[in-house]
Image (tube, rainbow, N blue to C red; front, side, top):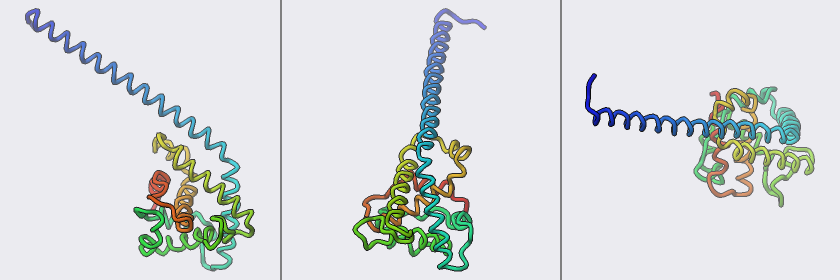
Length: 211
């Protein structure tokens, strides 16, 4: 291959430009990967701090499910079976209008789940945590506060965490995320929350929807 000094000079410039571009891209990817890995570690560390909330949430919710089943024969013993059948709740542009807009579109399984979660926030009280299906106001408040912290965590701290991390390391939290989305809707009908609600939480619930 032959060529004058001008040609070889251009080739050298092109090679230098390509090398610079690849170097910038590699640096950018390295920084991106480091930030992503740090977010994953931070997410998991913060989630461990919510162990008490998880314990309160599941203890009180499953106690309420047993009470609900006793009053409604024919419901599955395992709540997870119903969650898998119902899946994520349908969305509404404004969460406070959900009952009017989306409730008429519910499938039979979704209606059963909605009737259950709605009993946690029946309204008609000065506080959002009126005892509803739970046996005391103290339990209702404990459940409400645990649910609120968990919903905030999944909606906020999950930002920047890749979906594959949830699939590989938090698959067992699918039922929790779906229930949190449904409970957000029940609460919003009582306190009339403006806007679309916790959008990231809803998106995660739709992602784990196995229907």
